[in-house]
Amino acid sequence: MDLFWVGEHVEVKDDMVDDLSNKSEQQNVKSWNTMDDEEVEEIYTPSETRQNICRTANAIRVLSTLGFMITVEVVMEIVNLSISLNVDIHEMLGAEFYVIVAEKEAERRSMSTKRR
Image 1: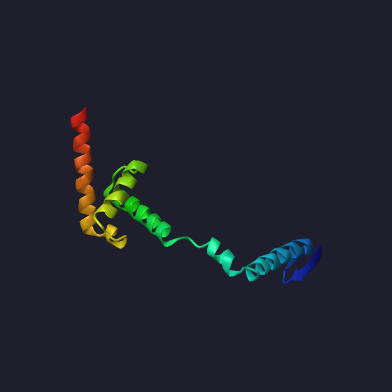
Image 2: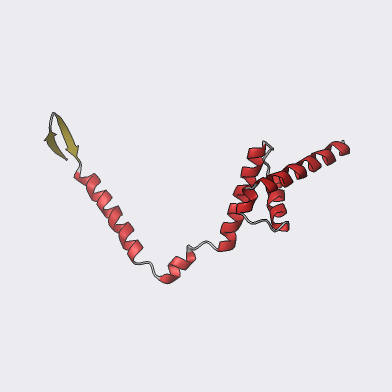
């Protein structure tokens, strides 16, 4: 441990902490540099998976914006609706899709009150 005067205060430098941080930085660089093409393919997320994640996120955004309760069942219903209507992921955030979702939710609520 070393003490240094810097201006009006004293700084403490712990060599052990520096050594540990330097070793971890070297390990990160080393592992990054030794990656071959096969390892890169293993961490690649398929396009279909990314699209499903985006579609699910947009379904949650739509439900949230409309003030509807968010459940797994309702989110999956909205995702499936967007797929069945062939709505692109970015179009899910458009006004037309909001109207469709609101109509579906009204229909779903009217069916549940009729059952009671």
